Length: 429
Image 1: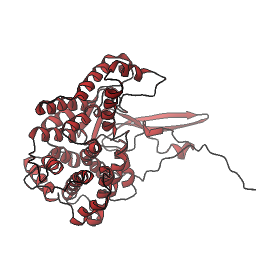
Image 2: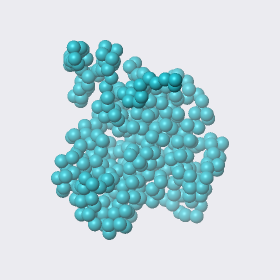
Image 3: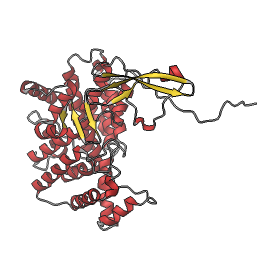
Image 4: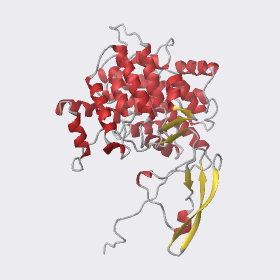
């Protein structure tokens, strides 16, 4: 296998049957047993709810070490990328495998501006949605509708002029997201401007109105760039897996990304940062901000309450993205010259969690969702847009995963097995 090291075979014995299964190792030392012939040779399958121990592919896009708190895109540490890059540089990195030089950066930026407009017929789609329609519902519908306006994406030569196709999706999704927000609050839409860069354009489309004098703040632009970078990819997570599952049927890029948006909408995935804000507000209202009571409630076996934004399916140490998000939140609040009682409460809650062995012994540490919602809140981005912001950031990763799967000779249509537990054969006589 390309990019892997053969480690020999593992022996599986059940009753009188023994088989040998190939074992291989990835570039960062992850080991895997190849079970593709298991059912054919033994009649058995593996049982792995949630696929938490199942590798669905080989990938050179993102590496995560949950025990050590490591996240890298194409080999670059997430902290370094967030500090030194713009979001469009990271998008280019994920899609192409290398960071752009200045000429490539400028050309990519020009294409993003060139493709930022939505077809006017699509703009009128927003008129048909009911008032206060959720922006995620509108966003997913707009993305899948793009395939009807740009049917040439069906061409099998997807790798040809990939920047054209990628920038069109990245840019139009951002515009559709801003339009969705304007529709949800009953404001007139704001078109993108040629003179603004990617994140500046989004903020302007969100907050400019004919009756204000909105000016894009560089601190807010920097914060948005970092937030989107932190969310740009996260290996084989739920929404990425959905994108690839849909793509495995031969569906086009827009249909696959739309499915990923719907998967991201769930409160256990992209909606988690919204639930952090709601939890903190509940603690403030119902517990008068008493963190000690909240900690004891979370530790009680008889109580189903859990602290949102603490713990992660993959990270069993401090989420590396959370460190960046925490500092970024402080920077935004310092620039605004305001304090936020919820941020103060969040910091107190974080300190209490980190100081309590109950959480550390279970690998429960604050994750990225603990601070991103607070930052968006400080930037005046409403709660129902939090998951939309996540989607904008995650699009480059989804595209990279989609492209990688299309080129993978081992790729097959997703078709998990099951262990049937229903009634055996019955007759109606």
